[in-house]
Length: 124
Image (cartoon, rainbow, N blue to C red; front, side, top):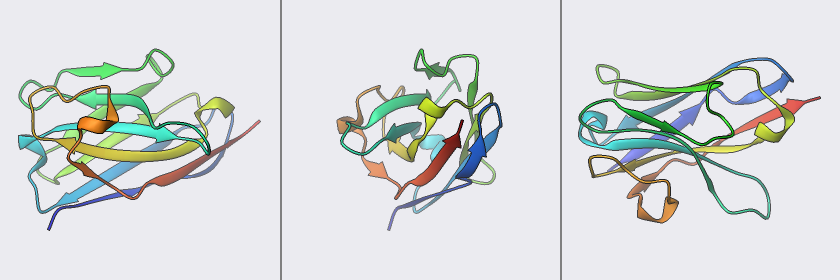
């Protein structure tokens, strides 16, 4: 059974940093493209960042470019999202996703597996 379990969310102030983790079981993350999405109430789930399967190339939404970094630790079977200089508009539930492909996608509908999410709250 595949499980993706996010952790690391919490309440922070504007300008602070957080590191989210996505621990996988039942799959080997090095065989998947991995991504982070976020969602606020009443809104669609939106792309944040992805790391490709084979080359560790990354892709970011414009809104987080230069502030967020996605990395993968294959030995721990865990994907991370380092979030720096957080803004109130970054507040959301963050989800980890896995897709059995080389590059993944910016579209959430194509991902095979999802975690339950972790809440990030940013106070101004």
